[in-house]
Each structure stands twice: as C-alpha cells, then as structure tokens.
Amino acid sequence: MKNLKKVILTTGGTGGHIYPALAVAEGLKIKNIDVLFVGTSIRMEKDIVPEAGFRFIGLDIKPPRTIKTILKYLKGVWEGIKIVYREKPDAIIGFGNYISVPVIIGGILLRKKIYLQEQNANLGWTNKVFYKFAEKTFLAFDKTYDDIPIKYQRKFEVTGNPLREEINYVSENEEKERLKLEDGERVILITGGSLGAKDINDAVIKNWDKFLEDKKLRVYWATGNKNYDEITTKIVKTKMSDTVKPYFNNMINIMAAADLIICRAGALTISEIIELEKPSIIIPYNSLKVGQYDNAKILEENNSALVYTNAEADAAIEKALELIKNEEVLKSMKVRVRALKKSNAVEKIINNLDIWRN
Image 1 (cartoon, rainbow, N blue to C red):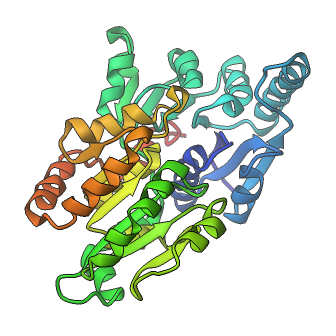
Image 2 (image 1 turned 45 degrees about the vertical axis):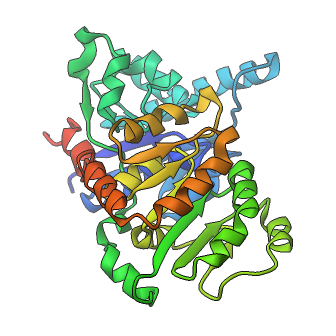
C-alpha cells in the first residue's frame, strides 16, 4: 500500500491562528493527506484540535520571557526537532506566533519543505524571521507586500485567509428569511469577539435608548462572556426582536444577514467581512502589537468601512445608528468591499504545496 503524504501544521494560542490552520487541515484531509497538528499543551488548541478530529501533539512551552520560560522553550525546540525527525513530513506549514518556531526550526535543520501563512496585514515576528527559509509564504492581504524586500517578493503569494468551510454555504437572502424579518427591517450586529470589548459595550449601553426607539432595527449584540451579566442588569428593556448574548455560535449566519457590522479588527473578522461583502464600523483593539489598526485600514482605504479609535467608541455607535438608515451609502460600501475578495484560500494554499509528485 502506498504511504500517505504527511503535512505538519503548527501554531496555537488564539483562534486567529488556530482556525485558519484547521481550515487548511480540513482541506488536506479531503485530499487524503495525513495531518499532524503541533501546538502547546496549555493553550486552547489542545482542546479545539482533537475535537476537530486531528492528531495533536502539545509542547510544554510559554513565551520565552524569563530564564525559566527560556529554558523550557529551548527544551520545546529540541522536542520540535524530534517530532520532525520521527514524523518525516512531506511539508510543514507554520501559521505564526512563538508556538510554531520549534517545528519550523526542526524542519529547517532536517531539510523539510517549509510554508508559512500570515493572517494579518503586517508580517508577524515569527514569519518575519523565517520567510527566507520558506518555499512560500501565503498572505491574506496585498498590503503585506509593503513589509517585504523586493528581492524576496517572489516567495510570497496572496491567497486570502483560509476561512471555515461553512462561509461558502451562507447566503444573505436565506439568512434574512431564516430570521423572519419584517418589511424594511434592518439588522445590525455588534461584537467584540469571544471575550467582548468593554469600550464598544459601554458605548452601546450609553446609546441603548436610541436602539430601542428604532422599531425597524433588529440588534444582535455579542457582549462577550466577561461583561454579559453586568450588561443585562443595565439594559432593563429590549425589543422583542433584539438578541443580547455572550456570543453567537451561529455567528457566521448572523454576519451574513447583517446590514451593518460593528466589530474589532482581528484578521479573521476582517476576512469574513470581505468574503460576506459587509459594510462595517470598526473599532480596532488599540495594542500596536496585535496589528488590528493596519487590518482595519485595508477596509477604510477602500471606503468600505469607517474606523474609530477606542476613545471614539461613542461617536462610532452614533454613526452606526445614522448609517443603518442610509441604504445608498450601505450599498456603495458593499460594492467597494467586493473588490477586496480573495476566495478559495484553502484550495490555493494546498495546490501550492510541493508534495504532489512522487
């Protein structure tokens, strides 16, 4: 029997890294490729990846900031080398952050084909360090080329971000029908991600009476787990049609139905907004380290989103209440965002892997 081709995917820490890797893992599985996922033994990937049905190895590592964590990290690098030696993969794909480094180093030392994927508008630290060793680095956005010296640009390809499969099967009209909207009723989605965003939540609470006044407006508000109880004590009244929850498990369906989305600027959120062609008001998380401002700028410069800082969250919510009534402007934002679409990222990434020849 012919041996299966094998690919190691490596990353972890946050959903922004894990879910694109899982989208690629699913694509590889369909093509009968043996997939191994290497992350940490302590972050969320240790549960999410096995639940998705993939073989998982967790390294006992943390960000190398103290003598203790540096020593542990060096041990993790040695483990990464051993995993690559033992597993003999045909290729390794790193999806960014410190967690992917041990296996990438193992791949370089053992002469394996290395590929990288960057979710954000700017190259993250790990991808910046290792792209010279990679066969190819897959980018979500054209803007990332600004970070790359011209002589290396041929080693990069813009594919868009790998997104969960179900995004291909949602349609705005079907989702609106499912919500049983009345004639002329509009949908606004407010989300700060699974943890929530205090500045956005506070601004919504402050303007809640205005949301209540508009009988033709249906609100879906994901508050995040941390703030939910406090918020529900502050907003005593809601319209029958409004839904306030910590998080929506069917988030992609609500995004598809929304006429306007108010959100942070995580790389996957931005990619989903583009894929679903949605007008948005974006309030980026204000840490430079996370790179959300540059993600948001992609939509702002394309005139398909309005961007506000945390300090301007009140103004952002007031603008949203005004914008949701302006069908013409929403339509033109929708048309503009379409120009940024990069579909079938999973397929493009898999087809680029040099593993198909025997």
